[in-house]
Length: 219
Image 1 (tube, one colour):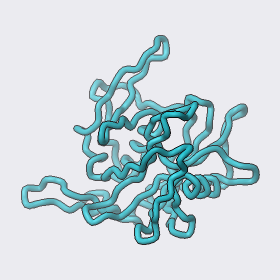
Image 2 (cartoon, rainbow, N blue to C red):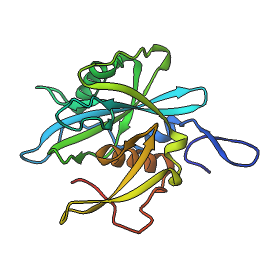
Image 3 (cartoon, helix red, strand yellow):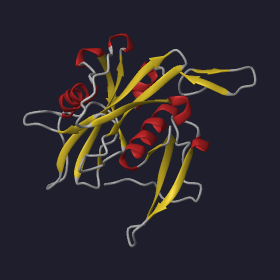
C-alpha cells in the first residue's frame, strides 16, 4: 500500500499526490521545544508548507533575491534566524509570515523533520505544516524573496527527476542531490530537507545516489 493516497491513470502512471495528513503526521518527529544545537552555532527555523491544489499537493519554496549576501538566488523554504525568546515553531511561523504572507492561524502544523547544520553554521529546524489555500494571499518581502515556487510533490518524489553531482573543492568533495524546477536548481540543505520529507512520506528512501555514496547530511 502506498504511503499516501495516489491518483493514477489507467496505465498506472503517477498523476497526482494528495498527502494523507494523519498518516504522514505519525512519521514526522514531534515539535521541538528546545533548539538543541551545538555550542557556537546560530539557530534558525523554516516552514515546509504543503498546499492543496486541484492537480495535487505542492510544496512551497521561495526564490531568494540575487542581491542577498548569503544564499543569493537559491531555492529555499521560508524561514530564518531566531529572535530572542522564540522556540523553533514560533520562529518558523513568524518568518513565513514576514517573507511570504502565510498567516500562523492558517497553518496546521503536522510535525518536524530532522534538524541539520548549515554550511553557514546555523542549526536549522524544519516544521512541516499544511496551509489553508483559501486563506493564503502571498505577500512577498521584496528585500528577501524574488518569487514563490510551487513544486508538485508528485514531481519531487520521482527519482528520475533528481540528479547527483560531485561538488568541489577538495578535500571537501561530496555528492549532492539536485532538482531543477523552471530553470531554478533546488540543492544544498533545502534539497536534503526535501529528501527527508519525501522519505518520511514514502516510508522509505526512494531517491538515493545511483553511485551508492553515503547518506549526505550536514551535521
